Amino acid sequence: MSIITVIGSGVMGSAMSFPARANGHTVRLVGTMLDRDIIRHAKETGFHLTLERTLPSGVEFYQLEELKFALTGADLIIGGVSSFGVDWFGKDILTLLPSDVPVLSVTKGMLSLGDGSFISYPRFYSSIAPGRDFCAIGGPCTSYELADLDNTYVGFCGRNMDSLERMKNLLETSFYHISLTTDIEGFECAVALKNVYALAVTLAVGLSLRKGDIIHYNSQAAIFAQSIREMRRLLSLWGYDDDNVIYGAGDLYVTVFGGRTRKLGTLLGMGHDFESAIKELSGVTLESVVIASRTGEAVSALVDMGKASKEEFPLLFHIYEIIKEGIKADIPWKSFG
Image 1: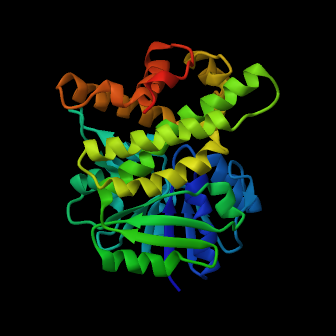
Image 2: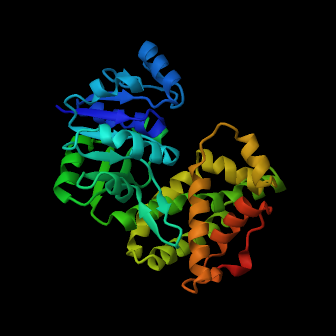
């Protein structure tokens, strides 16, 4: 059996302890400076405060200052931070990690370079620590259902297929199923984009609730279809294989049906402006807002350079204007296609 050290005890990083422990591996869960209460409580009870689940028996818990010991003998390191923690992980943690141990990140997203292009988190980490083996997880998977052992089919991306195969052997179980790809940028872009379009689809949930107490699905399905169309266009715009949309489409589906992004989109659809919706969700990490803002900024830059047409992305720019300009939700149906 192997030793797997998870750095960042948020909900997804912590949920990775379930497939790891199911395969009999030693799991060391290390909290960030923001996770002190989570780790303290878990040490005493085994219960995770934000995942709201008891973690598997045998998981070991460490505060950040105990990181050095938690890394001793590790065969795999899982980066469990959200997109808000990527800079911290890259600048403060990577240099502390053993150089011969692969790193698998649960973080979904891309970093904008300011010129209309993006880089993936694995490439960002590689720019800080060249030569290291950085991989990432994407695809449809909520932390809560992974913890409940519901069947889940995700993708692992990385540069080296042999390394990916080893990670798959460590973590694949009867309920956690894994596909592999070396198309890091296309894969990561697709799974990041689902955050933008989950906001768009869930606007329809709020619009239905504004009219009455029945949630309708025709409008959600129509926006879902337009979302896939725009996601494929964006992948092609950045030079990626648009077949990667399959990873983002599954992730989009599961995100629409639950979680923080659904809550925000529903509030916006019900008539809240962005500022009041964010206040109502105070304390909730909203990666969808970060990714939607970055995507809107990047495509706006390409439009300004004459490399893209705003008319091809009506949903993207509607979400971007809700966030940046405070406009109210008003689905641009006539612009679909």
